[in-house]
Image (cartoon, rainbow, N blue to C red; front, side, top):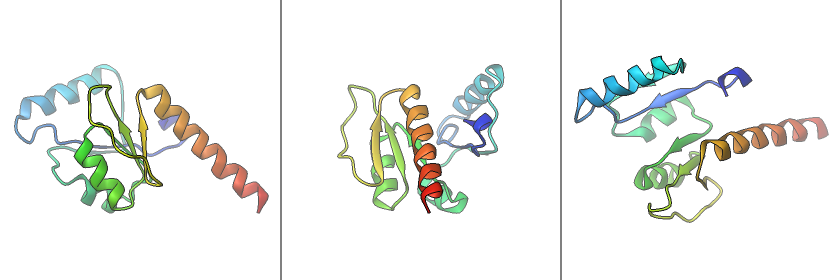
Length: 120
């Protein structure tokens, strides 16, 4: 996605209760050579960071966070495992089950935006 020109921001609660979890995540990102434009660790209120960064699309796997974000008009993809609680989709919330689905959603959203721009 970064290669496609998207700004990528990590907003994570990792490290809030256990700094080791943040260190493990940072090491994994480095090992996989995954680079982001901004990093926010130890965050409990993801909504405030989304608003501050003017996030176009937030991806999270936490039911309550996704509900809060979409209730506050932040476009959100709920990365839901089969065993997790289901959320009703709406204009600001879509459920996805894999990173492939996320990429297709972003790609199709960009494609639709570009097509709409050509029609004007």
